[in-house]
Image 1 (tube, rainbow, N blue to C red):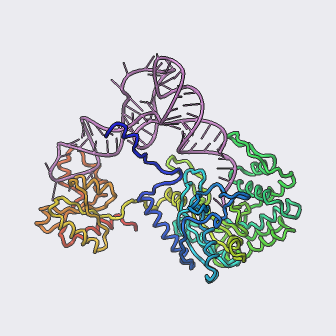
Image 2: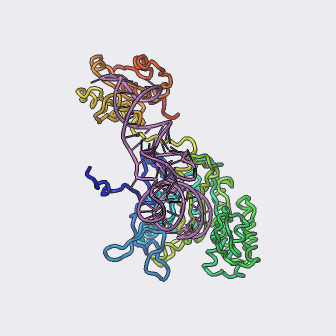
Image 3: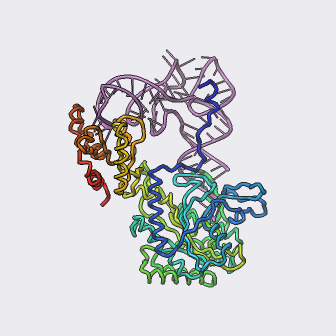
Length: 497
RNA sequence: GCCGACGUAGCUCAGUUGGCUAGAGCGCCUGACUGUGGAUCAGGAGGUCGGUGGUUCGAGCCCACCCGUCGGUACCA
């Protein structure tokens, strides 16, 4: 290579927060998506796909008083100078779709899976491109739809192998939060920005604790790193209202409702919120979803500004450890709620809606730390080797025969010798390697090698490799006519159950 | 965005108070072994020490800025 050319080579690089997903994770994700889809469909949700790109106004992300999009999204201008952006969730596109298809039978219940994009700081398990799998019911204000959302979340997590005690669905109602905020304002709702700031503080309860929230609501808080966060500046009496709300004892759903009712006394919004929660409780109880699976939790906020009623989140309650063995806070894997105003933006008409979204990648990462998630990167368990290229026609026949019998089979199409072919088979996760040389051909036989057994036994090879090769304890020869049965027998040793 | 820590082979790291051609383990490749991956042994490849500038006779080491990673914080529709 000529001098200087190296500097002109293109550096292989990848956008921050984006990632390549290789076979092992890809296959695991597909299995997971299939299971989730099965649950969603069992409730009658139907699929929808929408474009990854939307006009920014459809996403509702123009900065106030500015002609350009809010930060946090990937946006650019098209040739007509219109702002276009990658979707940051699947809910806004759904709203746009419903607004454009007014003839849809209501309630419209759809599911959708796909990548969404957010220009935020990436972290472990947090990416700028990630998969969400949503289900929503549009066009009904009934709490039955919200209760069902909780049921779907339970069924989904359990279908993914997370047992009833290993997760919790937590439910709250924005209207109850608004009721509390009204009490701060002496009976009327406080200014929107103050309300938002208070909710943000409440949302941080699990991270900063009750005392942290107290500081954040008041003068501000300095964290361990010395960083100072400005407080909301509420009066002491107001802070006490919020804290007493947050200190509500967790209990049965109906018990939480009783306590909430007292706390928001005098607030119409608050009373309505509690009434809605009672409806959800009744539906869940009738359907057999008890407090152990779905709990009412006054501390649940969900950051999304567009939620108008019940909000829910699904959290994992078992410890998630990374490779170092350190316990990692996994946060919520499921999130959702009611958003009654989102479609109205387009149509001017009421179109209540509710639903939830599962973070596919995040949950997959958590699940991989549990047992039982298959991360094998192979799609075919069988490799037909090519010991003698002159016999390729025979190898092609053999491979076709195995496929016809329903066995995924790869024919080695590389150019290396048999030794390398075995290494390739083992590196690509094959379970069985098949060999036909002149000997087998003459005898009407096929040699089969159990590669996994071979690996297990490899420790015993010892010094006398010659003898080991002669014995080949993991290898055996069968009549050509019985090759399918022989391969199936080996695979059966390793198939689950 | 802000604060802090850290960037040395594919991976995990070592590298004395600045001093010759920058090391190890694992992995990878090749051979012993052209009908056998995994054992063993022998060899080999792979680094602009994150980048740029500066201090110095001399910088992986010191200084500045930049980039990246991690942690915290803010934001999270």
